[in-house]
Length: 256
Image 1 (cartoon, rainbow, N blue to C red):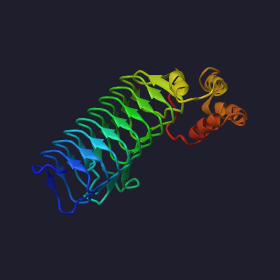
Image 2 (cartoon, helix red, strand yellow; image 1 turned 180 degrees about the vertical axis):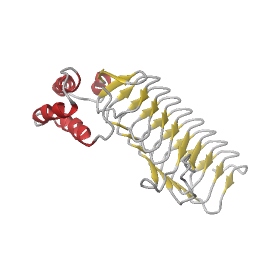
Image 3 (tube, one colour; image 1 turned 60 degrees about the vertical axis):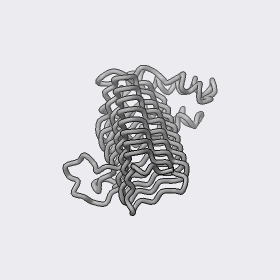
């Protein structure tokens, strides 16, 4: 299962059925779970833990040191879950001690070519990052988010569940759950209605989220006043509670 032309450090731990293509390099401190496939010419450095059933394509760079001038060789790490697809020329860096010391990728993510995931990013589950999307350090991407191609996200920003960014979006503030944004700088362009339909959100839930969106974006309220208005609506709909929780813990302001 391991091509003889691959270079595997004795300090790496690979499950018995891991596949490694020719000319790939796997360093010390790397752990790779069952049925994961590593294409040719990939480079994986540690400390990095990769779960089961992942597919890492050729020329990816995974677990390299963070691109942070403060980094001084501390033993930070990268953690990748299960069933992720990581395409050609993707770069994923380890964390820094200025944060939690770890970059995390969840499960069932589709990470397309040339995506960059910087140090200390936290990526949830079932996301899609289209070609050339770039996450600066400390970015948080929640579950079911879709980032359009060439989306750029500033340090410390968060993108809430089921949000969608258009191609070429420039994001320097937090993106609330369920919202579609686009442009540079990004602006809100409604709810991600098609995504909500595809994921089984009921018509009643979508209607209530539309009400929440109008409160947040159409009534010229301050963010704090909108939050107060949303509290009443949250009692009727758990999805609005998710939105409200995100708004109450945002730190950079929201895309509006």
